[in-house]
Length: 417
Image (cartoon, rainbow, N blue to C red; front, side):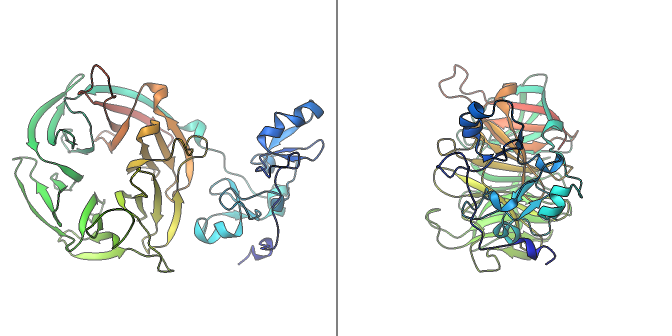
């Protein structure tokens, strides 16, 4: 390994040099050479060094300043010193991070980082834009699932009202074409413009003929497992998240992502990593990137806390994401519900309780998050791409609102991801 000399397991990472709390270093004063946390930067250091030059450690490589990697604690492993800079993810990392998350990324050693021998990648956050194009009022309470047909019509499922509707989008409302009384736990459009759905208690997916509304058994069966989520890839494979019967938590039995061909033949299973450790607790939503990465929303408990797990086609874990520390706290945990990949292969995740979209790379690293409250959207639940390249977000209606039975569907223009 070319960067092996940078990895020194015996190093003990230091915390902030101005307080005794061991807080994570986020700033460096190039005037007095102090490494400090945000609290001390705005507190004790401001009093003693009002005119000093302060740099964010993430920006140091872009300046004529230097930083000792081992002086910085790893964000993910607090007892480890950083040893490399990941230019793919724009962050300092420790040796543990390399094998678990950053294997195959562009890794930069301390000397090259400080000498400016590499061109650091700029943050993408400033380029990302979202704006509401249209708003539609539905007669549903929750829009749990969305599937968009080639003619622009949509299928929407509400498991509170036990409704599955095929709708046309009018000026500011949805017009119901077909309405079925059924409970849907997963939904995806096939390349023949029909809809695959998962119904309660069945091991075999059902197929809805979008022309007639008829529901029949499909050829996709994961027996003896129970399917949970469905995704159809660009090359016509069907990917199903599935589990064995019983209570979801604590986790017992099998938790699997199954890949099938068009004929329903099983091609591959993802269940354990290279150390025979379980990959998933409860796969609640799944999508893929153009290079074959499999992106799974993994539920962790009954409180709907979750994470994103991204696997290579070979089954290696490329990355995991458990929320953004700026917005996901113990009081406001990351509760992902639906996942989508964009044409540029970025991953979008809905975080309904926090009214956020999380935007990730194709390997599950954070690019940024977007607070949808800033543009008036609350309760983002389901998500889908339109036929014209915009994003649909299906919401849940606000509690105690005078309009509680009218969940909103938003169409958004987006750029930068």
